[in-house]
Length: 253
Image 1: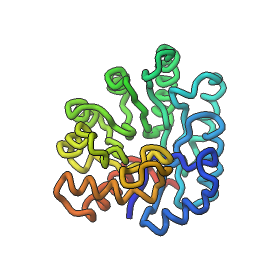
Image 2: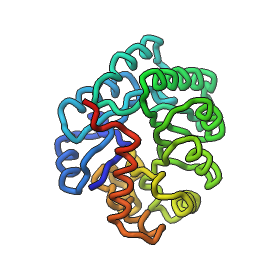
Image 3: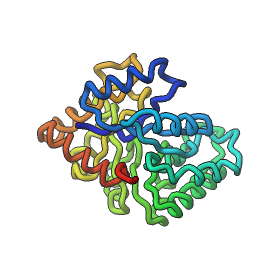
């Protein structure tokens, strides 16, 4: 059995969420964590976790979705973290990819969400694009745990994040021929620090590129990790599932 620790199975991207959930069940995906990015997707996450037993949620505000951000959204976040099926604050972080990035605003909102996660003892799911050093410098000042989603840094940075308590989210990019750095990371970092994710509908594994991604493709990612590490698919499935269960409290009542 597998856990997809980061996906966006939302009506914005999928016409038939029921079918996506059914395909999860048919492909040994026992749980998925659907991540919100803005106020509307966060509200939908709250609906989905109540509708489907295998769906858990992370709510938070993504660094590239802050144009219409309001201070009152911090209260929204706090008001909904007591839901037992909301297992993390996410998708949050820093993204310096675009030229018009307001870094100061991103850092402010990121830190406020980290403060909230600390207050409610929630793990975090972190987005970091072209910002890995700043992300690390901020996170090392907090005593939090969680996932560095779609990890794209060096082996050296991977080791540093692991040291401060984070696991690395590994997705479809691991199947790409030119993804040399992340393959090196997976080879170097102990399996106990790796989480499986798809980032659906994005980053589809190479075999199905051109199609929307789906949590049903998690076994393909697991197979690639097994190949890189020279271990069995079963070991990857068992260990990464245990990693996810240790990171996110799926069993809170």
